[in-house]
Structures are given as C-alpha cells and as structure tokens.
Image 1 (cartoon, rainbow, N blue to C red):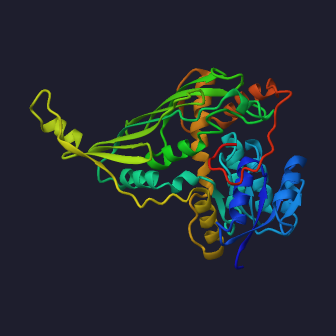
Image 2: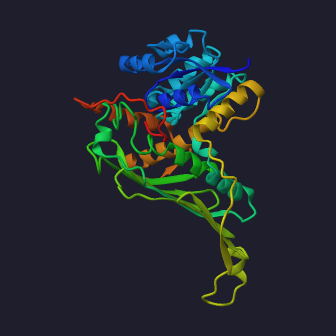
Length: 390
C-alpha cells in the first residue's frame, strides 16, 4: 500500500475541511476515495466540489461496506462518533475520530473495548492541538520533572464567543438530544485534552455550570470548574461562549517555576531554588525566592489537522506513532462529564465516577430536549477555513 485510501463520514464543517486539505495535496500519503453524509444538500455539495474519483454515499454503512477505503475519518455529530468507529473497526478499517470521542464515557469505553479486539488497526483521535509547539513545550517541561511537581494550574479559555445566529444554524446545535452538551462538548474538548495531557488527570472535580445563560439554548455556555490532584495540587478551568472579548491564558505553577501560555507565546518564570526548599530555609518574614522570566523558544511547528492526518497515515503505512491514540479520547471527556455531573448533583465528583449514573442523568435531559424549528442551515464550502468548531 503506497497511500491510505480514506473515506470521510460526515462532510459538514470539519469533514469538508479535511477533504479540502487532502484534495489540495496537504496529506501526501492519503487519497480521498469516498465521502458519506445523510444530508442530501451535503451530497449535492460534494458532487459539485469533489472529483468523480471520490465516491459519494448517502449513509456511513454504504461507505464502510464499499471496499473503497482502508480507513475512515468520523466527523459526524457527537453521539454517533463511537457508533461509526465501532462499525468501521469491525469491518477491518483503520479509524480516526473527530473530537470529542463521544458524549458520555460509557459509550466511549464500549468503543475502546472494540478497538482492543483489533490491535492490528490504527485507532486515532483528532487532537490537533497536540501538534501546537506551545503545548508540546509545556508538556515537555511539566512532565520532565526538572522543575518539580505541579502546585496549581489555571486555564481561562473564554475566547469561544458565539452569537445566537450560530446556535440557530442547526436544529441539533446546543441541545441535549443533538449534541449532548454545550461549550464543554463542542468548543473545549481540545483544551480538556491538553489540560490532562500536560498536567495529568485530577482525582476530584467540582463545577458550576450555567445552562443558556448568555443564549437561547438548553446546554451550558458558562463554566467554572475546580479540580484537585492526587499530590494536593489544584486546578481551575473557566470557559464560556458568551464573552465577546475573551481570553486564553494557561498557567502551570511548579515548585521551581511557572509556565504561562498566552497570545501564542510561552513564558517561563524560573526560580533559583524551589519554593518548598526556600520556605523551609528562609528566615526573612517577607522573603521571596529570586528568579527570572524568559520567553521560551520552541520549534515553531504547528501542523494542526494535517499533522494529525499525516501521522495517522504514517502509523498505518510505516508503523510509527499517531499524534493521539483513540483510547486517549476518554480522558478529556471524563473531565467534561464530571463537570456536568457535579452541577447536576450539586456536589464534588470523585474520579472515576459512576458511568451509569451519568448516563441516566443525561437521558433525563435528553427526554425533555427540544429541537429548534425554522433554523437557518448553512451549506457552504468550509474546506479552506481554519478552526475546530462544528
């Protein structure tokens, strides 16, 4: 096999972007051979925009059973990510899943269990932010251990502003039945993944979520979460789609320094001696360890979605490592599920939590979920736009 024959299931915002990148030769070891979408308007779009060599299917099942693909990329609404991933793996196809891995951890564990039965297949997750040089460098420093353990971490990621028109563009958007959540499930899976990828998983989560605070929606659009780690470190995660002048600042306080990522730059506040050591030996009441601030150099590489797909193809063809294994998708989802559960039950959630309890609580909300009428759906060529929104 010289190239991976890829089929894309779902050619909405993200699916069409991936298709456009592949057809523009940005993924040299991938050949786009098929697309599938159950929306006739999207198939009409595909017939107009994609060459005849790309087969078009009205269902994911037809694409998976076509024999035209070695691998599939699943880019459909969240609830169906595990469904089609499982279907493809059981047919012997390699799988790349768009974020999030799913809506609730119970279904993602089922997907992971199927993947374990097929170790010969490459199972990847589209965590393109892991290719960002800023976050790769942060992880290198934190996980390296040279500057001690984490004491505190804070991420304010509020530059996800969305007007009401965004939510009115699809009847499934921002509904419990259609999307399974709001800003945590749609905009923040990348940040929740990076949070645990860099800092590790917490043991406790306590969160306050506001549902439809800034928009006419039924899911969360404003979140403040507090977390505790096994070593006693704490973390705060703040996000919203309601701030027109939002921020993106990620801090990790270590025993001998602090890393700050903001405005596509990375700063390191390096102490001459670790804070615990200084506190034990210092005799000056208002003393403070000396240090310096530097802007860290990185390799500057940030290949994003194409980088993930190219690594996926290389893993299939050459046995190399993907950017993120599909199994890892459950970690960030565990955090978002725990935040929802904390708000719903009004208490701190210890990890791991009861998956059946979460599922039952979610289904209560799905049962009363409303789909919008007279939505203004947009059918557009989004293949050349950047982003990770759906």
